[in-house]
Image 1 (cartoon, rainbow, N blue to C red):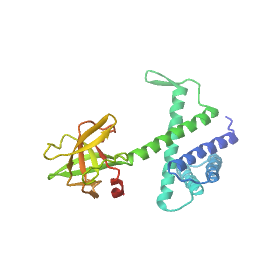
Image 2: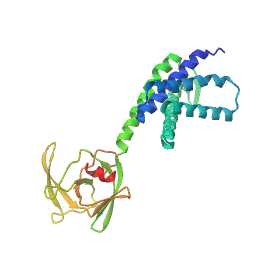
Image 3: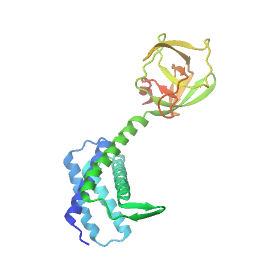
Image 4: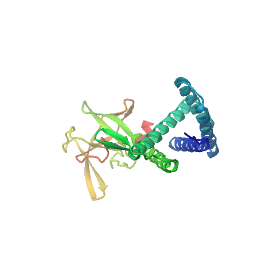
Length: 262
């Protein structure tokens, strides 16, 4: 079997370039592009040493060493957390890319007869691999950005009201800027049927919606405990019946509470 070392080397450098670029984008490292190129060349050249006979342990340690060198050359060293985050996301990107290519190869290269999978003689060539890989990395970057932007705003909140504790899955809604017009207290929106409201307890707050003006029934919370550590008082809880359009969320925190949480 012939092995074209130059093509293998070029392919390996290209893959390493995509991986390091994805780490830089996801973690917002903003490193110079030439450093990414140098790191990918370091990873690419290492493929030559894989033709040397090594046992499994030696090969594993060698790959780990190359990964560390790639990260240090590309992102340098600032502190231990910075270094390990770079290394972790390099491996996560590798898993995503490798798994995507493997899945694609299985779909193209094999057909099943019942529970049997048979090689049909096709396979992914280098050209297809180079074309498809950036799309896999792009999907990974897009998903990671969405996850970081969305799930970083999720919080566990304990509401204390009339000697009772209510537990909520809350989302920090930067668009929530509701205040009561009387004492300018921020209003947190809660979807719950656990709090019994009557007009003697409730504070009626007018507010504007897309469909027009409405009235929000609110109660004065004794306090909110956010993530078991941040205590917030002087807050109104606006109780609504409609479910919130965010997965698993039954409370929207006020935008101004972000300062207290951070």
